[in-house]
Length: 337
Image (tube, rainbow, N blue to C red; front, top):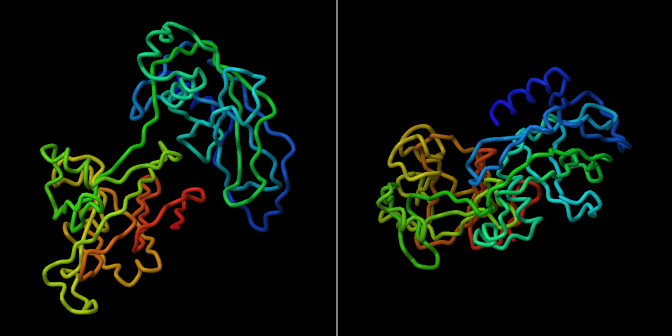
C-alpha cells in the first residue's frame, strides 16, 4: 500500500494537481462539470486497515471544477457498492489532503464505510459472514466545494472503481484527548489537580477527565468536554487581580506518556506558563494551541464553575466558554447553545 500511495502521488504531480490559490478580484460562477479520474492502479489488490490510527492510504484524483477563478476549495470522496444508489446513500470519505484534488484517503475510512454499506452489526457478524475472504469493487465519486460559499458543493458526474478491495472489520468510534489541571468532572465531582498523566492513571482519566469527538464528527479530531473549574486556594478576591497563579489552569494530552512534550497540547512552549483568559471566556474564547507545548490556560474563579471546551487538534485551536453548553459545528467552527 505504501508503494501504491507513492506511485499515485507521483502521478498527481505529473498531472499538475495542486491546491487551489486565491486570485485578486475573483468572479464566482457555478461550475457545470466536475470529473474524477480513472485510478491508474485500480486493478492492484489491497486490504483496508482495521484501526483508525493506521496511516495507510489509497488515492483518488479529481479535476478542478471551473468556479471562474482558482478558489481555495476542499475535496473529498463518496463511496458506494451500488452505482445506482441515490447520492444521499453514498458515504463520504475524508481526504487527508483536503485542499488537493490528489486525494489521499485512509484505507480504514474505506473499510469502515464498506462495513456500514454491508450492514455489518459487529465483529462477530463480520466473521460469521466470511467478509474478510470477499473481494469488493466499490464505486467512488469526487466532491468539491468552497468553504463558506453556499451552493458551491459539486459531485462528480462520473464514478470510478478500485476492483480488488479486501476489507477487515472496522468501526469508527469517537476519539478522545485528556485534560489535566484545576478541573473536576462535572458529574462525578472527581478533581484532577494535575494528576500525573501516566498509564497508572489511565482509568481515572478516561472516566473523569477526557474530551470526546461527537458522534457525528468521528475522525475529525474535534474534541468536546464540559468540566468544573476548581478555584485555587489563593483565589479569594471578588475579581481577578492579575496574578496568573490565582487562576484555575489546564492543558491537554493526546496520550498519557507522563510530563513530556511528545503528547502535550498547551498554550505555550514553556512548562507551566499560564495564558490568562478570564476576561474572554464569558463571551467565548478562541485561541491557538501549541503542539508539544507545556503551558496552561488560566481562568480566575472563586467557586466551582462549569466551562465548555472544544479542542481542534487538526487546526490547533481551542474554544472555551463559561457554562454548560451543547456544541454543534458549522464546518469546524463550534457553536455553543
